[in-house]
Structure formats: structure tokens, C-alpha cells
Length: 423
Image (tube, rainbow, N blue to C red; front, side):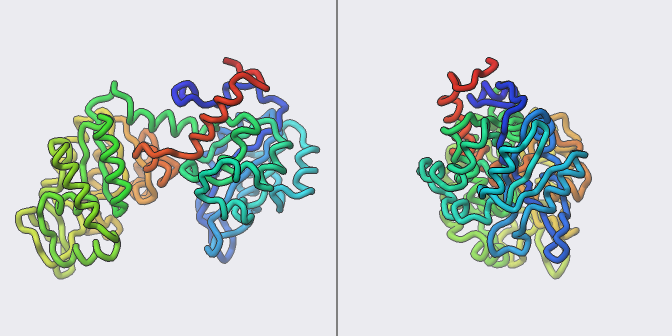
């Protein structure tokens, strides 16, 4: 069971019937700033299993939408209506977080009632304490101090924000038992397979432009022996090409200088990794460049060129596809190139389809990767699609995640009471 594996409580550890349960979800959704209409309810739908499993409870829901200054920074009224439609039962929206009318409503709730409180980021404490490491500061906020006495349990189901420290994410850990919801539980269970030794060979495909995150992931996985092979592509592949001493050319260097500040330090790290694990790190052997508005494929030996590198070439696609077909587990984060342009989407399209059609257990995270799946209509063929880009990367890179640490801390405190766990 994932609860035991991660040493956290889950919904299965307690009899929650009749209890007042505060549930932190991540239903941050794309919204039309003019009409206020929710454009994609994927994240709302992802939490329905948790809400349904709390049917006999008094359910109080916490969530955020966007952040100050953004066009989609708004109330959660539309989210409550959409959640109500999806559940087939009313979820009442309250325009407050810890105010008197909210607390009166919580006191009057009956089992089966569900309320969604106001956007947590409307309140200064949630914004000001973002990233604060001192747990007591989160615990002593008005948000936590006013809500904690009203509830019996706190359910953390917002995996997508588990890499952050904010009052509504970590502030309740020592005041009431904290439990992982179904989204959190599934993320930990499914992505945890990347660290299990019984699946082999295991490969990670790391692309896109977030070079720092990808290098952290690669280094952690190779250091701990979690991956047998790393396939680099996209801008990550550019960095490793440079680490091998290959000059890219003006077009690619102009892009790196603009989009990857201080890229030199990543080249240095990549060089060190190649020295240690060169046989386990695959680097593109051919690339596609934008030359006079057309796709030209050249080998690494033909670099540098002035034209910018936009994709991997067919030789690299074939090599990487063979690695995927022979693997038992594949982790993917980031595209192989500028997939938004049709002529440079070939590498990404071919590799993602190979993953979807392979027998390997597949884990995919990151917003761009998810967009590729939707564009190709192959999401149904992927074993696990992470709900959180930043959290997915942080998890795979072995970084400390405040949301998960809060769950662990709460179990250490409450495993002997005041509520009796089932096991």
C-alpha cells in the first residue's frame, strides 16, 4: 500500500463517516478572462474520486486559482458550479475563507454536505509565506488557526502544489491528522515505480527547455541507480551536445543565451555527468535545423551551423525508439523539439507514439508533454499522466517536497491518537 511505502496516512486509515474533513485540492484551471468560463475541467475531474470517497463526511474544500496580476485570477464560484455538475450533487461556494459566515456554515453542515471556500490566494498569508521553511509561521496564520478547530481531518490531494510550502498546504500537519487524498496517493504510487528495482531496463526521456530541472532529474536517477539510460533531446540535448565539445552555431547559441540564463554552468554539469555515466546518457547524433524556412537534417559532425536546431533527426529517432521498445519503464518530461511547428514535430510525435504503443510502463509529466498527448490523442495509452509539472520534476529529482513532508510529519504525530487508525 502506498501509505505504508511513503509512511503517510491515506483515506483508508480512518473511519471518516460523519467527520468534518478539510480537503486541499488543485483545481487551478484555464479560464476565459472575458466570460469567466472554465475552458478545461481536467483538474476538477481528477479530484472527484477523493470527494466521492468522502460522501459520508462534511466536506470543506480549499483551492486556489491563478495568482495576483493574472487575467484568470478570480473567485471559485465557477469551479463550484462545474464540480456540482460533475458530481451530480451540490457543492456550495462561499465567498470567504475563515470569516464568521464560513465558520457558522461549517458548524451547521451535515454529513454529505460539500462547500468550496474562496480562492486561497486572495489572502495575503497564502502569498506572503510561499516558500517559508518555518512550519510554525504557517501554523500560526489566521487561515490555519481559524479553520483547524472546525475540522477533524485534513486531506492533502493537491499533488501539483506539493512542492510548495504555503499555509493551506502544510499548516495543519501538527493540528489534525493529515491524510493523502486519491490524487496524491495515485501520484506517489504510480510515479514511485520509477524508483523500484524490479522493472528493468528503465529509461528517462528528458527534453524541452527546462534544462536545470532535467539535469537534476538525470543526475539524481543515475546517482541512485534508478535509471538504466537517459535519452536527451530538445534544449537538454543541446546542452549535452555542447558538453561533448560540439559547437552548435549562431542560431542555437542565440536561443540559449536568451532562454537559458547562465547555460554554461549546465554545460559544465552535463560534462561531469558524461564523465561519470557516459555509457548511460544518449545524446542526439543528428538534428533538424530551420534552414531558409525548411527542415534540413544534419549529423552532429556537420555542426556548427548558423541555422537554429529545432528537432532531432531520423537516426536519433530510430535509436531512441529502439531504447523505448526494449524498456520496461519509460519516464518522459518535455518534447524533442519545437513540436508546435508541424515540420519540427516529427521527433516528438514519433517518440511519444512509440511510448504509447510500447509494452513499457509509461509515466509522463509536464505541461508541454501533456499538450503533446492531447494533440496526438494518445493519453489513453499512457499508464500515468502526472497532474503536476513542477511537482513531478521535483519528485523525480529527489528534492524535498513540503507537502509530502507535512503528510509524513503528521503521521509521526498522530499515529497513536487522538483518533484510532484502522491499522
